[in-house]
Amino acid sequence: MPNVQHSDQKTGDIAALLLAHYDVHARDLPWRKRPGQGRADPYHVWLSEIMLQQTTVMAVIPYFARFTARWKNFAELAACDDADLMAAWAGLGYYARARNLLKCARTVVAEFDGRLPDNEEALKKLPGIGPYTAAAIASIAFGRRAVVVDANIERVVSRLFAISTPLPQAKPEIAAHMDIITPEENSGDFAQAMMDLGAGICSVRAPACVQCPLQSVCEAYRDGNPEAYPVKLPKKARPVRTGTAFWIQRGDDVWLVRRKDSGMLAAMRALPDDGWNAKSDGDMGPPFPAKWDHLSVGISHIFSHFSLEMQIAVTAWPDGHNPPLEGEWWDVNLLDKAGLPTLFIKATKVALASGER
DNA sequence: AAGTCGTGGAC
DNA sequence: TGTCCAAGACT
Image 1 (spheres, chains in turn cyan, orange, green):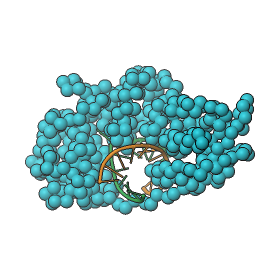
Image 2 (tube, chains in turn brown, yellow, blue; image 1 turned 180 degrees about the horizontal axis):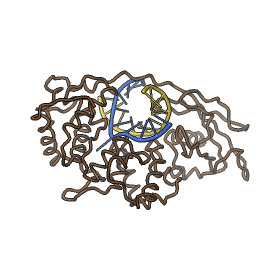
Image 3 (tube, helix red, strand yellow; image 1 turned 60 degrees about the vertical axis):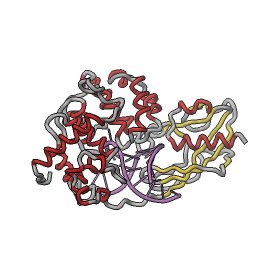
């Protein structure tokens, strides 16, 4: 870590000011301890932290409610069917998280008697738990002092100390500053308070410095340019790819496949496609010869690293036969239970709408 | 160690 | 509209 020097006065003030603000303004989130309670349930902390990776609180809340109602602890989750888990995660994105979630739950049951290890080092060895999540769980669920750094905290810290080094180069520098301002006690509350601050007052655009409990110690505020932080390197352009999905219908059923276990949308149920990916367009070739009707309306979908313009080809399949392609028939009236990723949900809507004419 | 991994809200 | 971004991990 870089050598960082602060005045003791300022660094001491930050935790005190923020924790006092947090006592009054903490968000009431389903995975947090209730006022007056001790610590939150480690299973809830872990589940929420995995779901919250690169995902907004608003998107997570309904998934968290469904998961905790259905699987109340590590043992129940570890015993669940893989396909059920993937379907329950459908729509939340970053599906590797769901596979690692299950691996992690099964490891916790098999090796740790159904309870999470209570320290950062051991947590970080579990599937899906990296530096951020390990620090968050150790501090929030187990009361350990840990230096928690997520994107919110990067923004808040870079403003507090007017860090001009661009991200991601600035990560060690930011972590060093966060280490210094993190208190010995209640580092979990401090981390959550910092994240609440970043999610609300210290927002990316138009931060509400007037309401900020750290205004008096913020260098970016003093300089009048909080929105200048964090400094970031320019990002690369997102390529546009084209491809096709294939809708094979037999009566009220459609033929769904299971995607391979690695790469994009891994292990998810899906419509057959023509091989489109981040690097190249699909080849337009159907999975087998048939009378394909290429619809005039396709769908657009934006992934993190490329955009996809996907056409849809449909064919009617005769009763009593299966297509020469590994998969399963699925009732089109129950497609919401298939656990399809969002781009295929879009495609099913287009295909079904075309059939109504 | 950059690139690979979804999705939807905000503006 | 396009652009940016979110409680990052994994390879």
